[in-house]
Every structure is written in C-alpha cells, then in structure tokens.
Amino acid sequence: MNDVLENKLKRVILDIKVLHILMERPYYEDELLQEVKNDSRIFASLKEGMFYARLCGLHDQEYIFCQLEFNKSKSRLLKMYSITETGKLQLNKCKKMWEFVTEEMSVILDREA
Image (cartoon, rainbow, N blue to C red; front, side, top):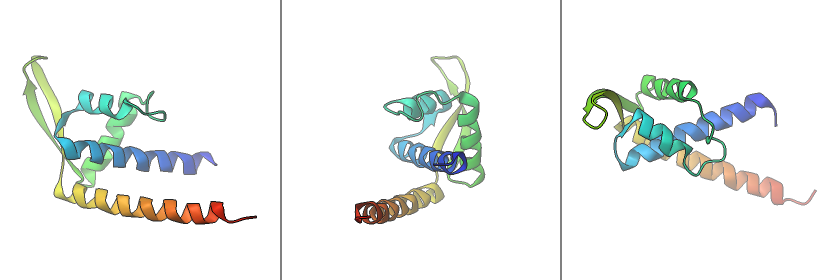
C-alpha cells in the first residue's frame, strides 16, 4: 500500500477512534491521548503534536468542542474535549461507511482469482 493511502486511512481511523472515545464522556487532552494509545498497534507511538493537529482538525469541522477547565489534581488549566451533535452524526456516517467498505473488501478478497 502506498504511503499516501496508508496515512489517510490512519487519519480516518484516528478520527473515528477519538469520536468514539468522546461518546463515553469528556476527556482532558492528555487523558484522551492516552486512551487513544491504549490497546492500539498503530497509535501506540502517536506523538502529542500529531495528535493535537488532528484534534484541531476535528474542532475546525465542529465534530468536537474544546474548553479550558481547571484541573484540581494538576493545579492548572487544561483543555477538555467533548463530542458535538455534528460529531455524533459524523461518527454514525463513518460507522456505516466502514461497514460498507469492509463488506466490499470481503467480497473482492474472497473472490477466487
């Protein structure tokens, strides 16, 4: 697979994972990054800068909301992220598209050559 396609797929998977995690509850940025890295082969070494860039992209598309909140345990302001209604709709669209793609790929790959 070429690098461009692989990078696009990883970005889509990361976006879906972030939106899915935020369906549970709002997360501080560092907690969210750790949650994304958990149980993940492709995101285990995800760098903070790359992750922040994706959060900015999701925020620009209005899929997530960001606000500053005071974290008592860390005694400082931290960014808190939550999913928006638009983000919930996008996540549902992504799920349907992913199901379609995996079904189509199964048909293609199961076909005898």
